[in-house]
Image 1: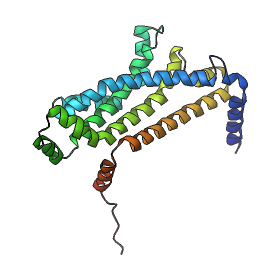
Image 2: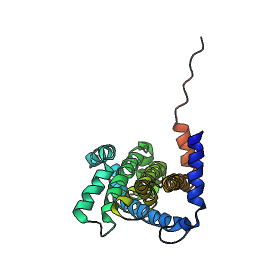
Image 3: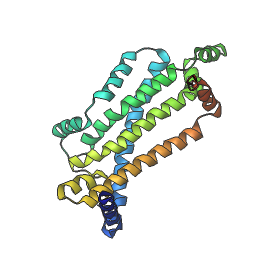
Length: 240
Protein backbone atom coordinates (compact mmCIF):
# COMPACT_ATOMS: atom_id res chain seq x y z
CA UNK A 1 0.00 0.00 0.00
CA UNK A 2 3.02 2.31 0.01
CA UNK A 3 2.27 3.40 -3.55
CA UNK A 4 -1.26 4.42 -2.53
CA UNK A 5 0.07 6.35 0.46
CA UNK A 6 2.58 8.14 -1.76
CA UNK A 7 -0.11 8.86 -4.36
CA UNK A 8 -2.49 10.34 -1.81
CA UNK A 9 0.33 12.30 -0.23
CA UNK A 10 1.36 13.86 -3.53
CA UNK A 11 -2.28 14.57 -4.36
CA UNK A 12 -2.87 16.31 -1.04
CA UNK A 13 0.35 18.27 -1.40
CA UNK A 14 -0.58 19.49 -4.87
CA UNK A 15 -4.18 20.49 -4.20
CA UNK A 16 -3.41 21.76 -0.71
CA UNK A 17 -0.77 24.23 -1.89
CA UNK A 18 -2.36 27.72 -2.14
CA UNK A 19 0.23 28.67 -4.77
CA UNK A 20 -1.39 26.20 -7.17
CA UNK A 21 -4.70 28.06 -7.06
CA UNK A 22 -3.62 31.54 -8.10
CA UNK A 23 -1.55 33.35 -10.69
CA UNK A 24 -0.79 32.45 -14.32
CA UNK A 25 0.46 29.02 -13.27
CA UNK A 26 -2.50 28.23 -11.04
CA UNK A 27 -5.10 25.55 -11.65
CA UNK A 28 -7.87 27.93 -12.84
CA UNK A 29 -5.52 29.58 -15.37
CA UNK A 30 -4.11 26.27 -16.65
CA UNK A 31 -7.59 24.78 -16.87
CA UNK A 32 -8.80 27.77 -18.90
CA UNK A 33 -5.84 27.43 -21.29
CA UNK A 34 -6.51 23.72 -21.69
CA UNK A 35 -10.18 24.40 -22.38
CA UNK A 36 -9.37 27.10 -24.95
CA UNK A 37 -6.94 24.88 -26.88
CA UNK A 38 -9.35 21.94 -26.83
CA UNK A 39 -12.42 23.98 -27.77
CA UNK A 40 -10.66 25.71 -30.67
CA UNK A 41 -9.33 22.44 -32.09
CA UNK A 42 -12.70 20.70 -31.74
CA UNK A 43 -14.58 23.63 -33.29
CA UNK A 44 -12.28 23.68 -36.32
CA UNK A 45 -12.60 19.90 -36.68
CA UNK A 46 -16.40 20.17 -36.59
CA UNK A 47 -16.37 22.88 -39.26
CA UNK A 48 -14.34 20.59 -41.52
CA UNK A 49 -15.66 17.11 -40.75
CA UNK A 50 -19.41 17.54 -40.26
CA UNK A 51 -20.23 19.20 -43.61
CA UNK A 52 -17.98 16.75 -45.47
CA UNK A 53 -19.49 13.76 -43.65
CA UNK A 54 -23.04 14.97 -44.33
CA UNK A 55 -22.31 15.55 -48.01
CA UNK A 56 -20.60 12.19 -48.56
CA UNK A 57 -23.20 10.30 -46.56
CA UNK A 58 -26.09 11.94 -48.39
CA UNK A 59 -24.73 11.69 -51.94
CA UNK A 60 -22.59 8.56 -51.63
CA UNK A 61 -19.80 10.31 -53.53
CA UNK A 62 -16.29 10.66 -52.12
CA UNK A 63 -16.36 7.60 -49.86
CA UNK A 64 -12.61 7.23 -50.34
CA UNK A 65 -12.22 10.32 -48.14
CA UNK A 66 -13.91 8.45 -45.29
CA UNK A 67 -11.67 5.42 -45.74
CA UNK A 68 -8.56 7.60 -45.71
CA UNK A 69 -9.80 9.44 -42.62
CA UNK A 70 -10.48 6.18 -40.79
CA UNK A 71 -6.97 4.92 -41.56
CA UNK A 72 -5.49 8.29 -40.60
CA UNK A 73 -7.12 8.05 -37.19
CA UNK A 74 -5.31 4.76 -36.56
CA UNK A 75 -1.92 5.75 -37.94
CA UNK A 76 -1.48 9.42 -37.02
CA UNK A 77 1.37 9.92 -34.51
CA UNK A 78 0.15 13.09 -32.83
CA UNK A 79 3.41 13.87 -31.04
CA UNK A 80 5.39 13.36 -34.26
CA UNK A 81 3.06 15.68 -36.16
CA UNK A 82 3.35 18.21 -33.34
CA UNK A 83 7.14 18.19 -33.52
CA UNK A 84 6.97 18.54 -37.31
CA UNK A 85 4.74 21.60 -37.15
CA UNK A 86 6.84 23.13 -34.38
CA UNK A 87 9.88 22.80 -36.64
CA UNK A 88 7.97 24.29 -39.58
CA UNK A 89 6.05 27.08 -37.80
CA UNK A 90 8.07 27.73 -34.67
CA UNK A 91 6.61 28.28 -31.22
CA UNK A 92 5.48 31.88 -31.54
CA UNK A 93 1.81 30.89 -31.97
CA UNK A 94 -0.62 28.18 -30.91
CA UNK A 95 -1.00 26.72 -34.42
CA UNK A 96 1.77 24.09 -34.13
CA UNK A 97 -0.42 22.59 -31.40
CA UNK A 98 -3.87 23.27 -32.85
CA UNK A 99 -3.18 21.75 -36.29
CA UNK A 100 -2.21 18.28 -34.96
CA UNK A 101 -5.20 18.35 -32.61
CA UNK A 102 -7.53 19.16 -35.51
CA UNK A 103 -6.01 16.34 -37.57
CA UNK A 104 -6.63 14.02 -34.61
CA UNK A 105 -10.23 15.17 -34.11
CA UNK A 106 -11.45 15.15 -37.73
CA UNK A 107 -11.50 11.37 -38.48
CA UNK A 108 -13.92 10.21 -35.71
CA UNK A 109 -16.34 13.04 -36.49
CA UNK A 110 -16.16 12.49 -40.24
CA UNK A 111 -16.53 8.70 -40.06
CA UNK A 112 -19.41 8.76 -37.55
CA UNK A 113 -21.25 11.50 -39.42
CA UNK A 114 -20.93 9.56 -42.66
CA UNK A 115 -21.97 6.26 -41.06
CA UNK A 116 -24.91 7.91 -39.33
CA UNK A 117 -26.30 9.37 -42.54
CA UNK A 118 -25.67 6.25 -44.63
CA UNK A 119 -27.23 4.07 -41.92
CA UNK A 120 -30.66 5.67 -42.14
CA UNK A 121 -33.18 3.20 -43.55
CA UNK A 122 -33.94 3.66 -47.27
CA UNK A 123 -37.65 3.59 -46.42
CA UNK A 124 -37.30 6.84 -44.49
CA UNK A 125 -35.51 8.48 -47.41
CA UNK A 126 -38.15 7.28 -49.86
CA UNK A 127 -40.96 8.47 -47.62
CA UNK A 128 -39.36 11.91 -47.28
CA UNK A 129 -38.94 12.26 -51.04
CA UNK A 130 -42.48 10.99 -51.50
CA UNK A 131 -43.73 13.82 -49.29
CA UNK A 132 -42.17 16.31 -51.72
CA UNK A 133 -39.06 17.19 -49.74
CA UNK A 134 -35.95 18.10 -51.71
CA UNK A 135 -32.39 16.90 -51.15
CA UNK A 136 -31.35 19.51 -48.60
CA UNK A 137 -34.68 19.24 -46.77
CA UNK A 138 -34.41 15.45 -46.59
CA UNK A 139 -30.90 15.79 -45.17
CA UNK A 140 -31.76 18.44 -42.59
CA UNK A 141 -35.24 17.32 -41.53
CA UNK A 142 -34.99 13.53 -41.76
CA UNK A 143 -31.46 12.17 -42.03
CA UNK A 144 -29.64 14.39 -39.52
CA UNK A 145 -32.17 13.90 -36.66
CA UNK A 146 -32.04 10.12 -37.13
CA UNK A 147 -28.23 10.09 -37.44
CA UNK A 148 -27.72 12.49 -34.52
CA UNK A 149 -26.73 9.81 -31.95
CA UNK A 150 -23.85 8.62 -34.14
CA UNK A 151 -22.82 12.19 -34.99
CA UNK A 152 -22.71 13.05 -31.28
CA UNK A 153 -20.74 9.88 -30.62
CA UNK A 154 -18.10 11.06 -33.09
CA UNK A 155 -18.00 14.46 -31.41
CA UNK A 156 -17.67 12.86 -27.99
CA UNK A 157 -14.83 10.57 -29.05
CA UNK A 158 -12.98 13.46 -30.68
CA UNK A 159 -13.52 15.75 -27.70
CA UNK A 160 -12.12 13.21 -25.24
CA UNK A 161 -9.11 12.52 -27.47
CA UNK A 162 -8.44 16.23 -27.89
CA UNK A 163 -8.73 16.96 -24.16
CA UNK A 164 -6.31 14.14 -23.37
CA UNK A 165 -3.87 15.00 -26.16
CA UNK A 166 -3.85 18.76 -25.50
CA UNK A 167 -1.40 17.81 -22.78
CA UNK A 168 1.29 17.81 -25.49
CA UNK A 169 0.89 21.58 -25.81
CA UNK A 170 3.33 21.80 -22.92
CA UNK A 171 6.09 20.40 -25.14
CA UNK A 172 6.05 23.63 -27.16
CA UNK A 173 6.16 25.90 -24.14
CA UNK A 174 2.45 26.70 -24.23
CA UNK A 175 0.12 26.35 -21.26
CA UNK A 176 -2.61 23.96 -20.32
CA UNK A 177 -2.78 21.24 -17.71
CA UNK A 178 0.09 19.44 -19.40
CA UNK A 179 2.49 21.97 -17.90
CA UNK A 180 2.09 20.31 -14.50
CA UNK A 181 3.01 16.91 -15.94
CA UNK A 182 5.87 18.03 -18.20
CA UNK A 183 7.38 20.48 -15.72
CA UNK A 184 6.86 18.02 -12.87
CA UNK A 185 8.83 15.31 -14.64
CA UNK A 186 11.57 17.78 -15.52
CA UNK A 187 11.99 18.90 -11.90
CA UNK A 188 11.06 15.56 -10.27
CA UNK A 189 8.11 17.27 -8.61
CA UNK A 190 5.89 14.20 -8.43
CA UNK A 191 3.07 15.98 -6.65
CA UNK A 192 2.74 18.22 -9.71
CA UNK A 193 2.81 15.19 -12.03
CA UNK A 194 0.12 13.38 -10.04
CA UNK A 195 -2.06 16.46 -9.61
CA UNK A 196 -1.84 17.40 -13.28
CA UNK A 197 -2.65 13.86 -14.37
CA UNK A 198 -5.69 13.72 -12.10
CA UNK A 199 -6.91 17.06 -13.45
CA UNK A 200 -6.58 15.86 -17.05
CA UNK A 201 -8.47 12.64 -16.32
CA UNK A 202 -11.16 14.55 -14.42
CA UNK A 203 -11.51 17.03 -17.30
CA UNK A 204 -11.94 14.17 -19.79
CA UNK A 205 -14.61 12.58 -17.58
CA UNK A 206 -16.48 15.88 -17.34
CA UNK A 207 -16.41 16.18 -21.14
CA UNK A 208 -17.73 12.61 -21.40
CA UNK A 209 -20.58 13.40 -19.02
CA UNK A 210 -21.38 16.67 -20.81
CA UNK A 211 -21.77 14.98 -24.19
CA UNK A 212 -23.90 12.23 -22.64
CA UNK A 213 -26.19 14.92 -21.23
CA UNK A 214 -26.30 16.74 -24.58
CA UNK A 215 -27.32 13.52 -26.31
CA UNK A 216 -30.14 12.93 -23.85
CA UNK A 217 -31.43 16.46 -24.34
CA UNK A 218 -31.09 16.75 -28.14
CA UNK A 219 -31.87 13.28 -29.45
CA UNK A 220 -35.55 12.62 -30.06
CA UNK A 221 -37.08 9.98 -27.75
CA UNK A 222 -38.40 8.22 -30.85
CA UNK A 223 -34.87 7.94 -32.25
CA UNK A 224 -33.59 6.63 -28.91
CA UNK A 225 -36.33 3.97 -28.81
CA UNK A 226 -35.54 3.05 -32.42
CA UNK A 227 -31.88 2.50 -31.53
CA UNK A 228 -32.84 0.24 -28.62
CA UNK A 229 -35.18 -1.77 -30.84
CA UNK A 230 -32.44 -2.20 -33.47
CA UNK A 231 -29.97 -3.58 -30.94
CA UNK A 232 -29.72 -7.36 -31.35
CA UNK A 233 -30.83 -9.42 -28.36
CA UNK A 234 -28.13 -11.00 -26.28
CA UNK A 235 -27.30 -14.57 -27.17
CA UNK A 236 -28.24 -17.24 -24.68
CA UNK A 237 -26.23 -20.38 -24.34
CA UNK A 238 -28.23 -23.57 -24.65
CA UNK A 239 -28.40 -25.36 -21.37
CA UNK A 240 -27.25 -28.94 -21.44
